[in-house]
Image 1 (cartoon, rainbow, N blue to C red):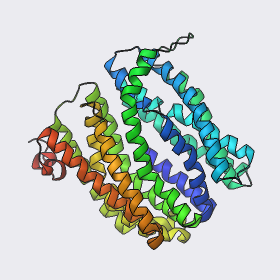
Image 2 (cartoon, helix red, strand yellow):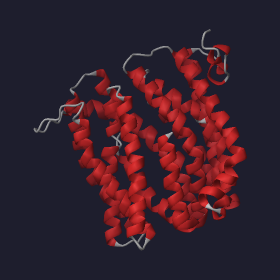
Image 3 (cartoon, rainbow, N blue to C red):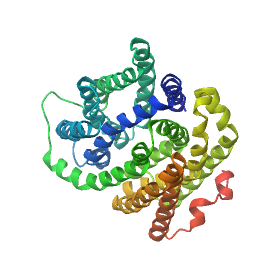
Amino acid sequence: MLCLIFGVGISIILNRTLGPTLKGELVTILLIPQLVVSFINLGLGTAGSYFIAKQEYSDEEIVKTNLFAALLLGVIGIGIGWWIFTKFFPSISLLLKIILLSLIIWDLWLCYVPGFFIGKGLITQYNRWNLSQYIGKFLLIAIFFIIFADKLNGVIVAIASLGLISFLISFPVLSRWIKLKGKVVINFSYFKKGLNFGYKVFIANALAFLNYRFDILMLRWLSDATQVGYYSTAVGLVEKFWLIPGSISLVLYSKIVTHKLRDSKDVAQITRISLWIVLGFGIISIAFIKPIIILFYSTKFLPAMIPYLILLPGVIGLTVPKLLTAETVGGWGKPEISIAGMLLVVIVNIGLNFWLIPKLGMNGAALASTIAYIVQLIFFISVYIKFTHLKVKDLLLLKRRDICHHE
């Protein structure tokens, strides 16, 4: 909830200061380093949490090997990012390009760090780390907006500064629970096994990124920055509902991978309760979304309301796959299920975006995403009930014992 508050605070500052067009430009530019990180991280964050929980290697070996991988892959990612910016964003200054590319190394390491907490079952520490990122981003953006006359450059420098600061403080933070000695410890046996496990998660996550964010790039290509500004605002608002399944999924994954929870019936119960909580908040939000946009972002962003409403059913439905993934990856050790599902969904999503965006603009992008999310929902339910022999209603419909705890 605190992350939600600071997340909304960040979006208020950005939207009110930048306006729809500059907000669209910012989202598009920042999407490039995010895209690169998504396609080069090799799933070592999930692999790190998995092998820390299995205790097959020492914590120090896993952490330092992942750091080595982050630095190596980061250099490769910078080369890829440099080519993308040079090819598609030639107007960006050299200094700004360097600042944006620095994000690749920081973000690559920072996508590994949470896995160390999860693997050791340190959910409270994970939450504190996650919250610190939101608070830091809020404060730095506010400060750099005051310092910089060019607000767009100000927010980019603020985000890059947060990445560097978080990178540096991550080591003393981790050292409270993991002994990080001075000598370099790189375990190539873990690296090989981590890649063998992680590449499947990496492919699934890369496809997920395409599913969740490629529509913004397509909208910018097929439309304009103002439409991206409206659409990214709608996406940012509606995806706040994922804080609920996201938080629960982390705890669920940690319990499963450490063998504290093994029963698929328990996972099904947690999934259906979470779904109905998100559904309830989603229905309530329909009545309040217009005044919320006006209050927080001003009437200039009212066009974001329609894509928000179109995205809402798909975002609610995606609660189920987000939770079931905790068991398919952490319990079954089968990230390939996510790969198959995401590949299907990405094909559907990109195809629909090419068809719908020229006709409907940002509303077409929203409709394409919702249809794709529903396809993902159907796929995961089908696979899960096949493996567990549960019924669809076990995942979707509340039961008396879900409400009446004493039963």
